[in-house]
Length: 90
Image (cartoon, rainbow, N blue to C red; front, side, top):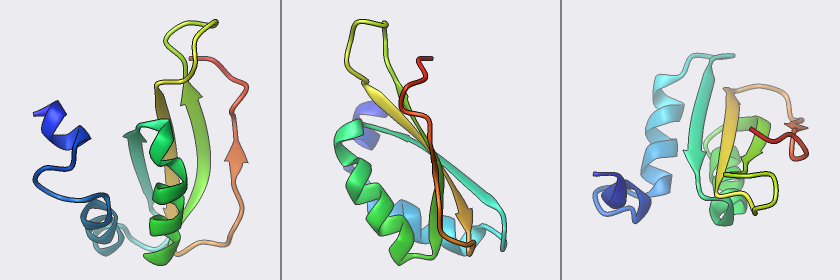
């Protein structure tokens, strides 16, 4: 099932964000884990659907390796601005 989610077999990233916007209350939070290569797409689509990316954290499997995941937290219908925690290693 994770391979199907990664390759957007059953739904697209835009489908997930659209439904998230409908379900989250004003000021509520949406969290997403995705591949770093899709970060710009995720942020643009979230803003298109009134979800404002607030926190972004890159996850590195080891300190000497590139990030293989990005964690994104967005707020529903909030003011713009974000807190990028790119230097932190999880």
